[in-house]
Length: 479
Image (cartoon, rainbow, N blue to C red; front, side, top):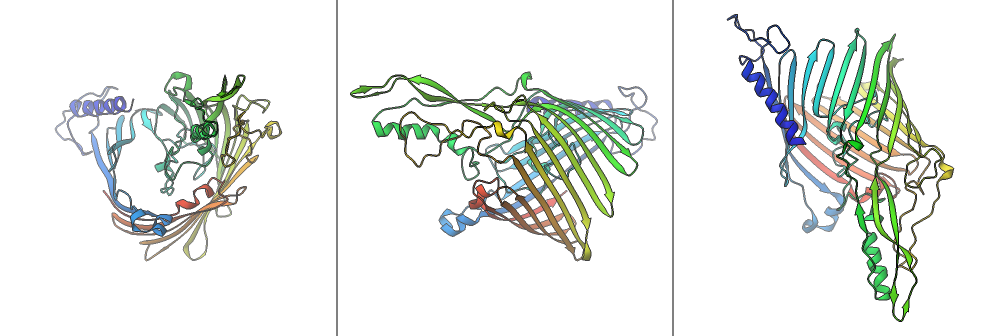
């Protein structure tokens, strides 16, 4: 799919180059011009190439404590390369990520866009932002996030996974716009399946086969291996669509939104099959044993509203949404309950050039009393140190999930040096991620020294990575 999209973009760009005299936005006094596909004279083609090259060192604090023979400092090199070509009626964009991995070149975004007066249509691999929140807002649902490594949380766009989509927007007057979106396939959140970044909640599922083998050794038998079933999320069954309307009413910017999609966190169920176990000289009657782990993704409807306004010198932003799943009674263990979500934030310049950016996000699960906290159990004894998963995907979790996201910045030496402290704090689990950084910038060169400090409850979203605190240095040249 990605190769087809890139090829389409290249064909469009090549068509522009072939159909028009090559230029860089300057007029041609010869008087000769080709007719555009929309009629009239074609504007000169503008071509832009840009990007950045970075050298970085990344080390984990717990590795340092183990000695040099356990310490790695990453791949050092990374880069971005961006191409765009366009006229007054259309353009094409390709953004590439470069790294020293088995896949050295990957697509960040690649799309074409056409302009028909107040109507704009684009298609391809795209990252879009809906909602007013600065980061992790409940209405920003189009692009899932990549959590497979949490060492680059400074820019939310770096975490977003580009999706193949068709997007249209129509401007109504000077202050209003309506948007429509179609995404033909689905992509969930990405989590690491091995290594230090595997989420604590997923480890019992990944280890279930090992648990069965260990239980079987006690009795000298071999228990059936558990298979893992994952749906084909590339089919139209998992297509998504949405619409959004934004306008300005007096001093306030207002947005209304509807989205139909699939929750990006997997719903996990376990299949049991009656199995005959022979422990000589006894043959047990058929007993249910887990034989399959099934991953699926719940469909849902989202209805939301957002608002932004300057109040008493504060740039205030708010979002509210209702996620309506098909578990209307709240007692289906394989479907997430409906929920309400909200976000409230602001930014403000304080004294001595200090800027504060603050945001609170919360989700509230409905019908929480219908959830049963029953764990998976085996009909034969297993070692006591094995942590079995719960049967309901939301069992043993808080009815609310609240996060504080804040950043304090201060610049020195005519903005050449920036100091920054950012924090993400989970209220219910009392866990956090603290990111202090110093950034020096001169023209197109920047040097950033930062750290990531995880702490708090080991069952929390951030606390589970308390052994993954890191130090990082990045030198970047932008062009």
